[in-house]
Length: 453
Image 1 (tube, rainbow, N blue to C red):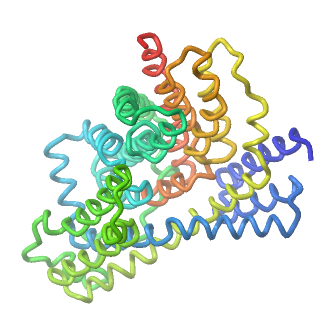
Image 2 (tube, helix red, strand yellow; image 1 turned 60 degrees about the horizontal axis):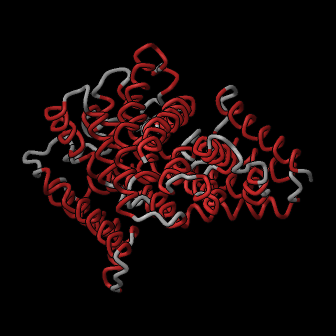
Image 3 (cartoon, one colour; image 1 turned 45 degrees about the horizontal axis):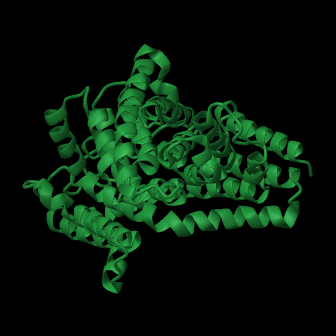
């Protein structure tokens, strides 16, 4: 099949999925699988290969993040019934105030927490951001969802040791210290300005809670009727545990994960540290510790009730992430990334804009921030010296472009949609548009750096 036919069928697939979900309100799981089937068959993969890629894509995603999602949601369920999240929200509101919370949380995630695996960080921070959003009025969820999406995606590519940043620095032989310095120069204004732009849009009526937010299926602990599921100790806590005690297992898990990342950067190997610092083991230990604290202050029946509700919550999240992997696998099997790479060259007057555009197109097609950034940067890396550009600018431009249009093939999109309680329409605004705004804003400081280097 010709390259043009594959490109056309890919465009039709993505457009059809969006229409099915947004216009006809078809369940995203069904729409994504249908789209994956059409794309595989229309691009000549055949019946067997299409089914193989769909099942393999689902399995690969589940193998990578399935347990992480489940453990994170279960920890959050117990913390919710311990009222830890509500109490922490109160502290944050007192310290930062309503207007500054989205900025403070986003900048912290984007600059200081990138040693934590993205999906681990998201399933932990998502419930907290949603809790804060509910306290900020009708546009609170929109503000917090946008701040979290921008922070997570920008941190991956701009901040060391984000996985995308490390890959780009290695590919273009940029010293990590230099990449860290220039990455901070880019990420701080990018996150701040992008959130401000989106906040203005929301304030002017671009967010409709009735259409952009999902109704809470599981009632908050304080609103549950007496004697109903989940009320044991969640309402009747006579002596609630101190916040440092409640969060100590979770913080311990994050410290273990961060330790593993630092050890890997330093190329230091220890089997015990490697085992304990793996995200799955670290979060499992955090879950066990949280269960013990919950049992001590709520009782075992309340812990079991919280775990039950957490398991129900995690089901939809797991399915959505899995089917996102289905479409991404079919796109990769169709060879779309290789096709798009043929149409770009370096003979242009604006190479940094070319790198950005190349990464943006690749990301729209394949749905992976890291892959699109690495591919676009790699295509121009060999001729970077002849262009008279510092390699760090090539890397940052590729990272910025790879943020453009996070959409339905992204695991992060569906995690943010579910954990923040958004409809698909709402997530398209906060995630797809919000991160795209950050992608464009990032060009400003990158081009400014080019003037001084």
